[in-house]
Length: 592
Image (tube, rainbow, N blue to C red; front, side, top):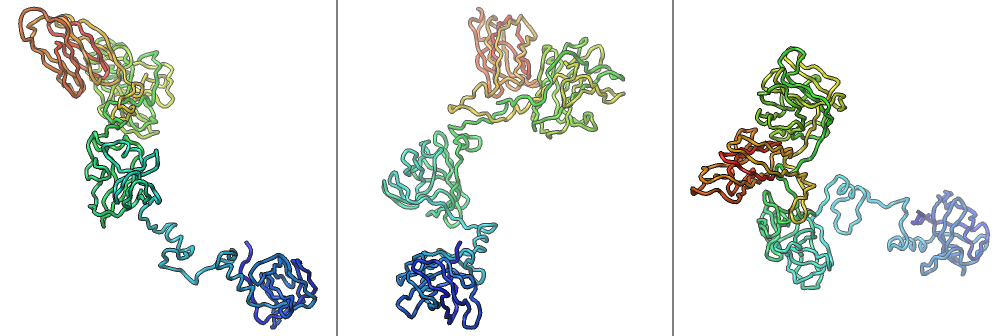
């Protein structure tokens, strides 16, 4: 940028070293020293040429040594023109007077000419107490912006249009169709959800302009410190409790001291507008236990061989079997393994646990366990089965963990077998067996058939706008079929393959005769050896004749069934067991 302010010197009397013509933009001085013989410093000057003749004119120019360049003449009305306005002879006088200097200073102050960027104006020290239109310093600006305290009261939109008659302090929203502001109403979804919300700062009639506060602390007539204020079912008003459905809850702000209301920016997602344990009518997320399955983390699913578990506790034999893995997810809900045919008659229980690693082997301390009863183990088909733990386990990414399988009995002739891959196949782990004599021994050539399952409990699922869960998202599955239960049959097993306890079982029962007594059905929690739900009790009311038609019962984990069916239903993660009374029964079932 160019220098703006002009240099000055007192009692200066110079002259031209050569004549100049009209329009000439350069000249040379005979000397460039003042009366004391001190040379003028280089810079921009304002000179008067031929001040004692009729050719008198005022110029502004740059001086370096005795050379004048970038000459402009300045008229008596302060109009600048390039070059000399008049002819000047050799020896013409060159002096400094006040006119050119005052002209430039005036132009600096009124903004016609900018100040010199290379020589910025400054105070003689730090300033304080600046207000309004005062000129701040760099230090002052940095003190309140860069690491200092920024004073902020509220954000206000000016020149806004009232879409209807508004009163100061009304709760309002901006309608997208016309950009005007209207009163909110908790009974009307379009006025409280997915809209810009604010507070009217003045009373205004329809079509008039006003200011709308959209954030920060707004001065109100009366608020209570710490109280939450919600949109009311009365248009434009507030309430201190979130309205219940079918109204739409919308938090406006929280009370501050001095009757101010701190506006709370709303979530842009309507599904979060509900309150604890009471979501709004448009809530689009679920967090219900057993509502989703987040899939498999680690796995090895080739099964071309088997390995015994629960052999006699002797050197070289496999009392326990373990597979290590390294998780890439932080939670574990259960594991899937492969049941192969038993050796002999197995009479014990099977326990699956997760253990941390200590020096390359299972630590011996279970993070969680799942015990499978002998009856359930016998009911499992030769296939993949799932062992779900009672709660999710939190894992550390990159650490080694072990799936440990053991049995309550140790008998080489009567033990279980698990599916394996004879070629290994899993790169982040290995297999070890254990007995009391040998401790943990590596089996480097194999890996178990296994999957580590993630997040069955408490995962959020996105539903559609009507609140229904897409089947693909939920990864839901169902088992349907028919079976005939002979008189006094103890069990008929249906391997449902859901990988979890079913949400409910629906069964239709036909056949039987009158007077068969009382029977019950329900969801049986095998892990806890108790009924989670006794669905119903049926008692034939009259003798004579055979029961006709069919009856239906829906048995859920958290409710009761209705209807009549003379069977008992036991449920685990992988099977449903129907037990009959002393009559032949035909069962049509659906397992979800």
